[in-house]
Amino acid sequence: MTYRVLRLLLMLFFRLFTRLEVDGLANLPPSGGFLVAANHLGRLDVALVYHLLDRRDVYLLVAEKYRKYAIFRWLVKHTDAVFVERFGADFRALREMLNRLRSGGVLVIAPEGTRSPTGALIEGRPGGSYLAVKAGVPVLPVAVTGTQDRQVLKQFSRLGRPSLKVRVGKPFMLPPIEASNREAALQTDTEEIMCRIAALLPADYRGVYADHPRLRRLLEVGE
Image (cartoon, rainbow, N blue to C red; front, side):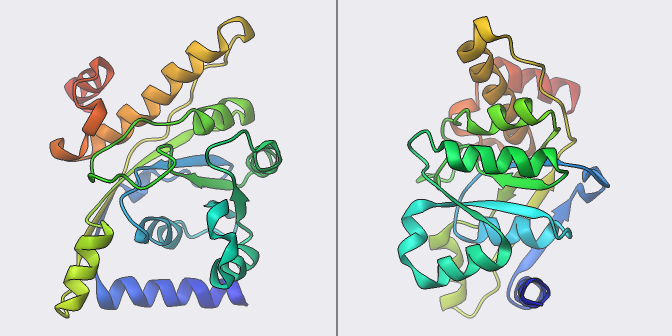
C-alpha cells in the first residue's frame, strides 16, 4: 500500500511541478535483473529514476549519513532500500545487493558516489561495475540533466517548473573479470559505464570523461 501511494505522489509531483522530458524508455529491459547507472546532480535524481522504473523490485542505495533523519529511515523501510557506507568497503550492503540482482531485481546506483559539485561528471567508483559483473546482469546507463539542487530551488522559488531531462541508453554487459587482473579490469569497466553515461549527456556535462578515448569512440558510432 505504501509503495503504491509513494509512486502516485511521485507521479503527481513530476507531472504538476516539473517539465519532464524522457527519451529512450524503450531501452528498458522488459524483465530480469539489471543495474541502472546514472549521473548524480541533485536530490531529485533518485526520485526521478525511481518514478520512471515502474517495477516493484527496484532497489536503491541510500548514503549511511541519512540514517539519522527519520524521514529517510521511513523511506528506506517502505521502499526496501539499503543504507550503504559510500567511502568504505560495506560488505553487508554489497552482499544484499548481489542477492537482489541475482534474484531478478533492479538496482539503481550513482557510480560517482555523491552529487557532482559542478554539474559535470566526476570520477566514477568501481562498486557498480563490481556488482554488475559479479551478478552477471546488464548495465543500463541513464543521463539526467536539470536536477541541480540550486537550479531546482531557484525555479520553485519563482513559482516556475524546472525542466528535467532523462535519456536512457541501451543496456550492455560487462565482460567477466579474471582474478589476476581484477583491479585494472574493474577500472576499465567503471570507465565504460561512465563513458556510456557521458555519451548520453550534453558536452558541458561530461566532466572528467570529456576527452576519454572510449567516449569519442561511442560518439563516433552513435551509441
